[in-house]
Image (tube, rainbow, N blue to C red):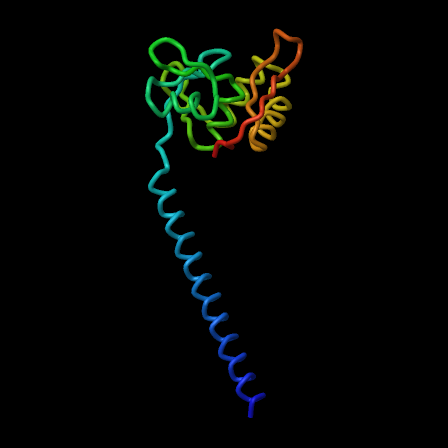
Length: 161
């Protein structure tokens, strides 16, 4: 009889563990759904920018300055606008965080942007692929042309998404 009781006890304990695991799974799934809903609510509207030669100049807004303050994109210039390199501009366009317009006010598509950038920088696409890869790995990338290199690379603890 003693064996039957211990077997029954073990079965009860195993069932309790299973139900605990199931409730933990459900809790985790509920939290994931909650986080997804929150992130969708937090999706920010894209910042407007103008393609001006070798740069993209953003509007003067808190979201634009956030590019620099939180992720070190570009440089803050007069009036609180952010001046982005062509590489940074394309990266933010791909991430749907930036809408680029021409100087006459037309929206610039990805293809047109790359075409214009390649006229200014013949190696633009190769440099962009490297830039994008490094940014996606969490590094801050700045130009280093005055140092005789394409990029300066800095560590960053937070990846921009």
